[in-house]
Amino acid sequence: MSLPPPQESPFRTNIFAGQVALITGGSSGIGREITRQLGLHGAAVAISGRRQQVLDDAVAAFKEECITAIGLQGDVRKAADCERWVQEATAHFGRLDVLVNCAAGNFLASAEELSVNGFRTVMEIDAIGTFAASRAAFPALRARGGSIINISATLHYGATWWQAHASAAKAAVDSLTRSLAVEWGAFGVRVNGIAPGPTGGTAGVSKLAGVDASEEEVNEMVASTIPIGRVGSTWDIAIAAVFLCSPAARHITGDTLVVDGAAWMWKQPV
Ligand code: HXC
Image (tube, rainbow, N blue to C red):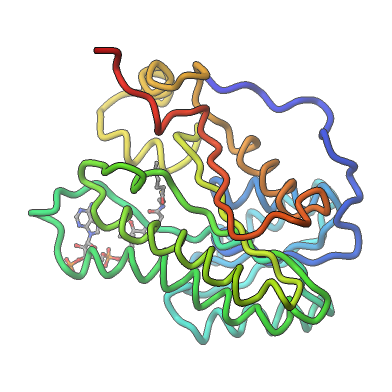
């Protein structure tokens, strides 16, 4: 129950021609569609992830759509892997213009049952991984000016049951978006975030809905709590990333764009 993408992009399809993007977590879910849209709008793309086969499958699918793509195996929790991804992407394509921090980990757990290691794991993937990849990419991005997109969430705008770990991690990501925007603006590097709401066909919905129901049933249930009347699609998030990386957003930095159909602010009428 999300709208199908329009037949034609609202943007010119060559806006990123000659540019190179590195997307962590780019082989599945939201990261995969962001990668695809950056590619369909002209960028050469490098995706990183832990599972080689998943990377290979995604790269093959991108190539079928004439997108120039490579896969880089590794774990965003290892700073050395983040540095290697940037080195390999720049060695392969000669430059780097865009970094999308999309690698994330999450599960439902009450604070009482969540182990310290479970909390640390999500902080390491989401928050420290975002910092490590951004820090690694900065020297390449500042060479020509570029853009970073941090995929966030709205979990921490209020408070969300069973999400103490992910809420803390995404709050840190939003803070990092602002700090890096302030420090790196003078170098022509813009840093923005996107906070998706419930997004159809992603682990975020299937894992976190917390009910035993089909994807369609979950979508319908979730849609009834979204003012715009439907769950988002990966295209909705990806096209927001295209906008934020494009010259149309040249004066936007340090912001986190909520793409959720007003879901987070919804309250039952009293
Ligand atoms: C409680 C759990 C748990 C669970 C793991 N842990 N799963 N605790 N409930 N369901 C605990 C483990 O017990 C362990 O702590 C610690 O977390 C590390 O777990 P590992 O399995 O060893 O870690 P790892 O294999 O590296 O897996 C990381 C992961 C996993 C995050 C736990 O789920 C993962 O890799 N996921 C990647 C994909 C993903 O989750 N994508 C969803 C993103 S959705 P102990 O103490 O036992 O050692 C998203 C959207 C949010 O981000 C917004 C929604 C609207």
